[in-house]
Image 1: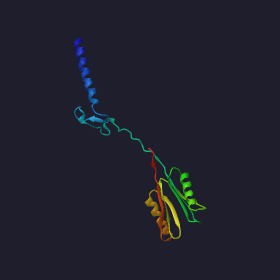
Image 2: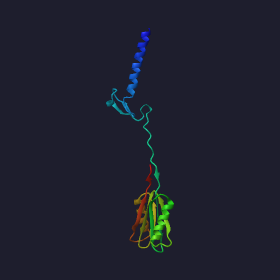
Image 3: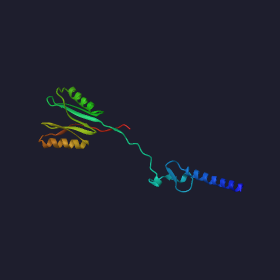
Length: 166
């Protein structure tokens, strides 16, 4: 009787050891498709027995700012782009305008994660911001033409798109 118990225990351990070995024969994220060797491993299909792929990290973005300032009395113009804060963009645009002999520079537009442009004609200028450079330029040219101005052209354009930080 003791011999039968030992024999049953030996057979049970042998079978369980083989089953555990078979589960570990494929790398993580893969499963055996047929047989137990490494050549028969493949990716685990999504949704298979509750399997979920590992979570991927979500990228982190930092807003970038731009601004445009003008002095109508002197015709001076200043701009900034790709600045880390609204205040930095405004300060840089005003400083640029003052450096170009502007005495009474004022901010015309401040934008983040967008594009800004200045369109000038023979009689006036307009400034704007929008999601793409094409949109802001087309809007500026349309505004210039609709005002009856002539020789409408893009004087300045730049984008301040978000910067990936992780």
